[in-house]
Length: 249
Image 1 (cartoon, rainbow, N blue to C red):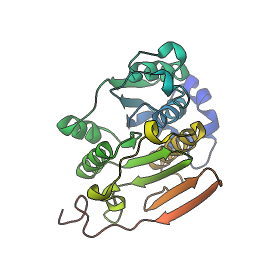
Image 2 (cartoon, rainbow, N blue to C red; image 1 turned 45 degrees about the horizontal axis):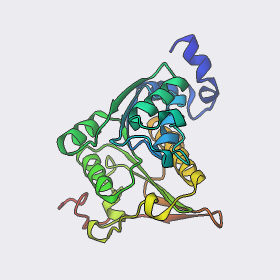
Image 3 (tube, one colour; image 1 turned 180 degrees about the vertical axis):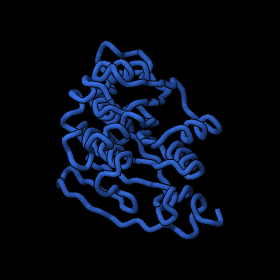
C-alpha cells in the first residue's frame, strides 16, 4: 500500500476492525456487481470509494430519463449510454486507483458461473426473480458469498447468503421458485432514498464479509418499511429440502 492509498483510505484504516489488514483485503478483492440501477449505483459508488481492487459490473440496459430519479451513478448527459459505461465513468471519477471490468450484457449460464467463481463476493442488484435465482444458483455452485438486496415502493430488504458455511441458507430457502411473484419498480414505483438505503447497506455488508469485521446478515433477512421507518430482523434457517443448497439437491 503506497502513501496515496494510505491517505485516501485513512478513515477506514483507523477503524480497529478494518486496520491495514482489512484495507489490504479490500484492495485485493474482486467483487461482481450485477445490475447498475437503483441498488447497483450506491453499491458501486461506495465500494469504489472504499477501495475494492477489482470491480466487475454487469448490466444490459441503457440509461433512460426515468432512471435518474434514483440511479445516482448516472446523470442527464448519460441518457442513451449503456449503464455499465456510465457507471464505470462515475466509479473511476471517485477512485481512479481501482480496476473495473464492464459487461454490457446479461451474464448467463457458463459465463455467469465463471464470473461468480472468479469473484470473492457477488452483489445482487437486479430487479427480477429469474436473474436472482440464476445468481443464487451460481453462487451456491461456486461457494461464493452473495449479498442480496431488493427495493420497491417504500420497502426494502437485504440479506447475506454464504454457501461456504454448510448451515447458511441460500436465496432459494427464502423464496421458492414457483412461489415468487415478479414485481418491478416500473409497475409499482419506488421512492428514491429506499434504493440508496438498501444499496448502501449492501456495500457495507460486502465490506464486512471481505474484511471479517463484525457480524454479517448471514442467516437473517432485514426488512425496512420506509413509511413507518421500522426495521424488522427475521431469522432465516436453511431449508433441509431446498432444491438448490440441500445435500440432496
